[in-house]
Length: 91
Image (cartoon, rainbow, N blue to C red):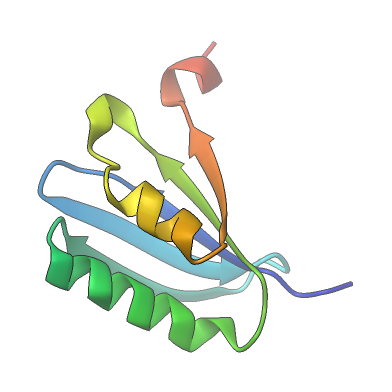
């Protein structure tokens, strides 16, 4: 089975919380990034450093449009993106 890098992204208006792990359950990293171009660059550098040619999957809670433009930038890298809706999960 191929190891996939899995990224969980809790989106905020100014700062986003990130957890990086594998589909095997290993937690590799946790960090915050600002909702700025510099923060996005740090996000991609840090996640890419863990990828090591593995496919990357990102699960993002994208409420009130705060995921933009990060969601588009993730798709431009051809990473798989999942939109998590906490309201639907709570039902």
